[in-house]
Amino acid sequence: MIKRVFVDTDIILDVALARKPFLESSKLVLALLENYIAIGFITSNEITNIYYILRKAGGDQNARKFISGLVKFLTVIPVEHADILNALSSRIPDFEDSVQHYAALRNQCDFIVTRNEDDYKYSEITVHSPIDFLSIYKELL
Image (cartoon, rainbow, N blue to C red; front, side):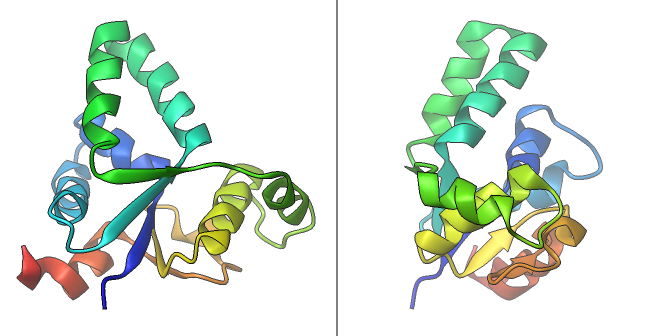
């Protein structure tokens, strides 16, 4: 059964900004999703945050080009009113991560892939670092 995977912003920025030492593992996570070995999800909020950061780092055209590539294989999900309400009363300490968690939960994601595992300590979804996630799926690349 194909798994539904929510990708945290840090994984995408690792690739977009070539952040070492995280670049290679994050690139492989996105490659798995691009090859449809699992179905990838990202929130619309993440897209706008990524655009803002990439525009500052490399300009509008580069930011748009990168995001155009992402949305070819990642499903963009909205953040809904209920996600905000749930996040406000959540035990997940980081509000932004909590909002993403509830959007992922509502969209029946099986995993969250992030380098900030501690931020998702109270997640109702299984959380993996890129390296842990790859140890499960790498043989499928």
